[in-house]
Image (cartoon, rainbow, N blue to C red; front, side, top):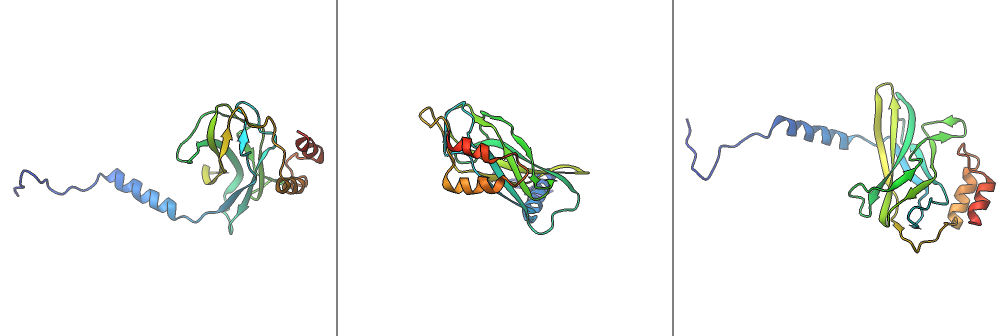
Length: 191
C-alpha cells in the first residue's frame, strides 16, 4: 500500500455520470443545425404590463439542407427570458404555441404566428421562440431564437403600430396560411 502525505490525496477519476453528461453535451453541441429561425415580425420594443401586443409575433422557419426525414410536425413555442437571456422569466401569457404553416398547410418550412401575447409584469425581457419537431420517436427541440429587448412599463403606448418594414412583411404574409388579412393590417395601422 502506498502512503500519501497528509496534505495530498490519491488522484481520483470523475464519477462516470459526469463524464457521460459531458460527452452527451459535446455531441449535442457538435450536431449541425437543421433549421434557421428568425423573427419575421418581432415583439414590440415597449409594451404596457397586462396589455396584449397589438401586432402578432411571426417566426420564420427555414430548413438548412435536408432535415431529418422522420420530422412529422413542427411547432414554435414562446417563452419569456430575462433581459440578458440567461434565465427564464414569468408573466408571459396568450397563445404560446403555434404550428409552422405554409400556403399548403402545416410544413417544415414556413411561419408560426403567436397571437395574442401579453407580459403581465413591468421589466425588461426577451421573447424566446423555440422550434420543436414531432416525429414517430417523440418531440425534440431543434433550435431557438431570442428577440430584442422588450421594455414593459406603464408609460408605454397602449397599442403598437407597424413600422414601414413590418408593413411590407405583413402584406407579404397575407398570402401565407396565417390568417393575416389586409383588414387586420389596416386595423393595426390605425390602432
